[in-house]
Image 1 (cartoon, helix red, strand yellow):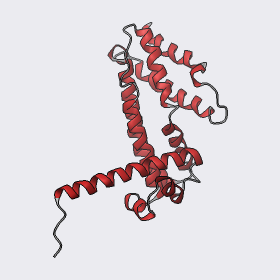
Image 2 (spheres, one colour; image 1 turned 90 degrees about the vertical axis):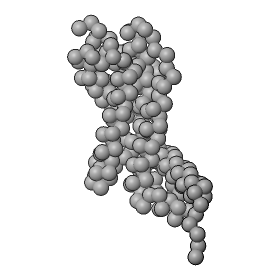
Image 3 (cartoon, helix red, strand yellow; image 1 turned 180 degrees about the vertical axis):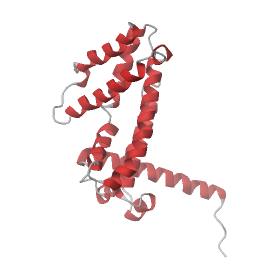
Image 4 (cartoon, helix red, strand yellow; image 1 turned 135 degrees about the vertical axis):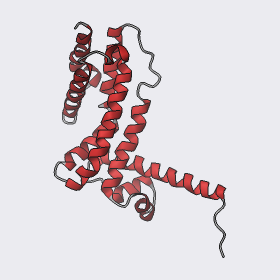
Length: 205
């Protein structure tokens, strides 16, 4: 009779499994951003990850579950990291400038473009839409909570803060999509001044 695996061996197998999963997720995001949804095949992802097909299917039985998990794996990491070590100015207007710049960074990350690939595909793909929607709502909540930390309690208690935050957030997403066909320097985007003014106006009311 074979003995059960020892605890150290079991932990080692679990760690290797987690490492393989992360490798697959990272490869999936890279393939999705570079090749688009229709060309992000499991064969291409498998090759990019350097794993066997059996190993990939063990972790992710369907392509859509893999792509959705991959985008949110990367996004959750980046959302937590963005602004983590930021030194915030005491002056509220100066803080607005820094916070808006960090908000805009969300829309310049690989996970943004990967998400947009899934959004567009989900428009005519009901199964993907059902899989994507709850995770996108979770991610949106994470980003908005982080934005609240960027601005701090002096802003978040203001009556119109959430309205302005959500308006600017949606505006940034729309403007960022334009960069797909008209790439330019995002640090020089003229809308940055408009977005800052929206938040600065809260201080004057």
